[in-house]
Image 1: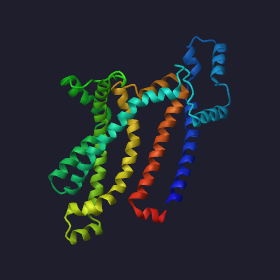
Image 2: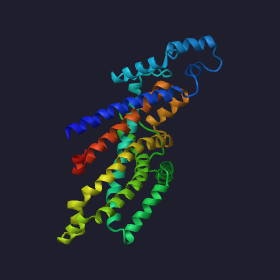
Image 3: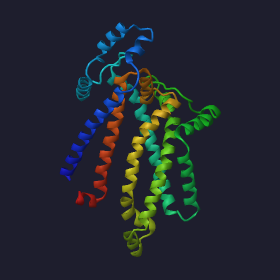
Image 4: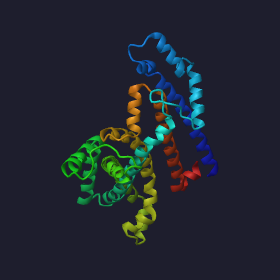
Length: 315
């Protein structure tokens, strides 16, 4: 088991390095000129050349990549060419919004989807299962941003219970900051819960058809007892797969939701940096999101081995 973990960790490091090469290459071939954005359209060629030299944009691409990668490995994410702020500090500030939003959305999705998926799977032949399945299909069809707008219409504009947008800093008013995240977290979490419910339902239905469940039932165990003792662990394997994918999907969904609710998180920072051609910030953000995806997939792979001894034996 330890050897397998080391091998997977080595592949994770290689994947992160390949991702860094791809991210740097893609970001640096985007059209536009940072110097022109900063100085404006009336800048002279001499002024543009001077600024490009100051920003290091006239250096070879391979040298800029090495400097960027070495800086990230030492915890130095560089300085924004537009705001002159430290990118690492900027990302940490935005994570104070995006991090709680993503975690709250994931918690809502799991808390809602697991019990509903189990109920839908164990009652798939009656009305309760059909009702839950229909509701989950409706949730899948609704985009997260539209769900957010519906929640704003009902709870912010209609009932005036929660703010429609904006964010108050945690250090200024923690209660207001928490209330600002309720609607976006619910909008994102419910949409993800609809998808997860379908997978949990399918996994429960499949596991009930397995021979070991039939044997447990033949020995006198009830359906719930057989599932609790033998079925849930087996059904968890495909659920963990989609859960890992959804956790990474939450990052993408959070980017959209943050712009709908005007939250100063990583999503808005990414949009603004792309529009302003602040390449270093874009590189760091995309690399951060890519690293999160790869690490989550690595953890999902390790979870497989804990849930299913057959994978450990054949790996």
